[in-house]
Amino acid sequence: MTMRPDGLVVVDKAAGWTSHDVVAKLRGVLGTKKVGHSGTLDPDATGVLLVGVGTVTRLLRFLTALPKRYTCEVVLGTETSTLDAAGEITATHDMSDVSIESVRAAAGTLTGDILQVPPMVSAVKVGGRRLHELARDGVEVEREPRPVTIHQFGVEPTEDPLVFRVDVSCSSGTYVRSLAADLGHALGGGAFLRKLRRTQIGSFAISQAFPIEKVDADALIDPATSMRDYERVAVGSATAVAITHGRVLPSDAFTVRGPGPWAVVDDAGTLLAMYRPHRPGTVRPAVVIPVRS
Image 1: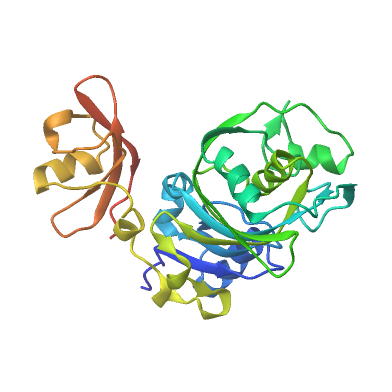
Image 2: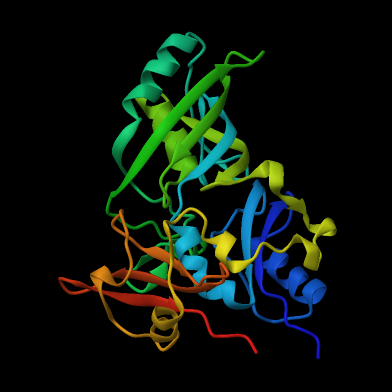
């Protein structure tokens, strides 16, 4: 009996592929329908896409929550309908006198905890419909600003005085295209994003990513390692049995330091579950991994 594939694949998505295209391709390559991704990359964008296979599809929410890192170019002086190079030009500005010093100063005002309005091309739902669906119908609606954190907003000049290379580290849920547009506005004009590349999700970097044509079963990272960005807790056999049955446990059932969630493994290092805080003095499973026969 052939063991079903189980694990995480770090894919370097090429331009022109949708995230769904990658999932569909890997379902065929790996011979299973149980494949999903942890966070959409636009078709024009490239870089790190985390793809869960088998039981790791149940863990994708924890991967989605990890911080991200991107590189891109910001083009000053032009605004587009999609905030990137794929959209129609909606406004132009003379920004020929903008210096690298002023761009860096503006980027500084957009660093740290900020509020960001989701773009109309996003998948955020308003009134039960996704924004990008409304945008296709020519409808624009008010969007509530959302809190995000920009950990780093590095800017470097290029040979073109209106184009700047950007390196952004940010919390999950950040729209880099909105950040580019906000940078243009902060400089008294407008801007759009191009050449977006995601270089890191949590500790999973582009240096360990596989092009789609190189992915096979050997590219799979085991479930426990897929949760390496979370505090790991090893438990003995008696506690392991209780965990496999999804039991709520007293907080002192295992020693933890951080606020959770925690990756709970057995003595052999096999992932049993992701646990989180529950009522005072207790912890409960967020996801229990079925025992494989």
